[in-house]
Image 1 (cartoon, rainbow, N blue to C red):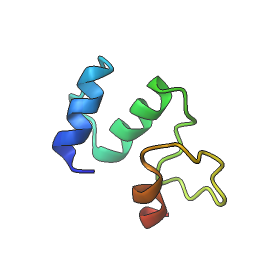
Image 2: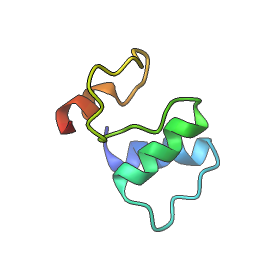
Image 3: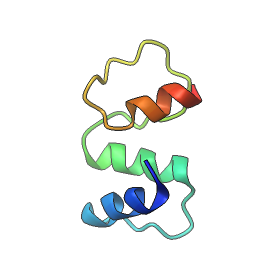
Image 4: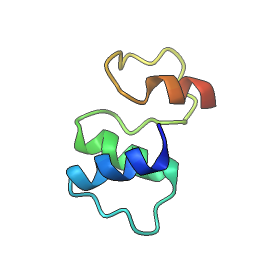
Length: 61
């Protein structure tokens, strides 16, 4: 997902995007959506099958 799309999603969830990098912003979005904030932490065997960050996360982990 491109940064512009991430910013749009964050704004829709009323998350302040100032001074946050991509990883921190995605983790805040995860928390707001009720998921564990685990993006790019290297968690093996992630159980979050419906997380929209899953593909990007697997690429970084």
